Image (cartoon, rainbow, N blue to C red; front, side, top):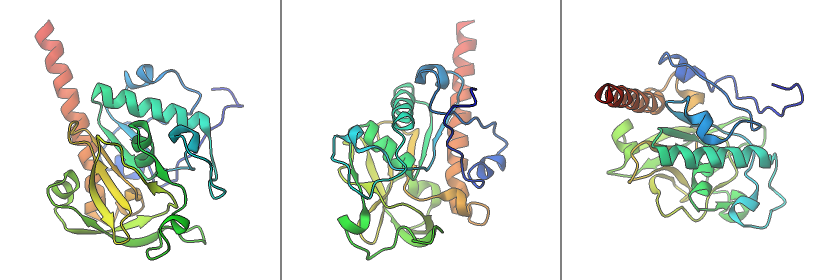
Length: 234
């Protein structure tokens, strides 16, 4: 890796839930080979939090509130999301990751929640610390089957959210102000994403850890199927 490459470091808490499941983790910078090459080495994909997605990727005018935009990263992650979905590689989207999946599938975003819907629910503190609030888990959804609860307390740090949801996605959870907080893809059970940061509280909240456990189980299932196919060919 060149010393001039742009890197986008993860928060220290991000890898911890996976460490509890004994998985091998790789972080890819935006200056990476095409998506199919990367994903040929992966059993699952996590799309993490980060800066705002450039509105050019969902054909919108950029609001003055948009910040920390890195189009290279946006393009790389949109390509990864599309390729993973096409190859049925398990994907967990976290915060920005949920937005990437929505944009990759044709949806768009609310660029600033206080401007767009008001401040009934605080989704991001001004002091830089995450804020806890409740989300409503919708019945008969993937999230409901994972956590087996009707509500969750979640750690939130975002000022954008889904506006028009991609047609192939389904809402799994909402905040009391109507913000979409979790989605899945009914035609592809390996795709799941949340607008909050489960890695912040997973160490003390088994319902948040369960989201990472779900991803690992889906990856294990894919590995087994791959091995079975290879054995059947031999």
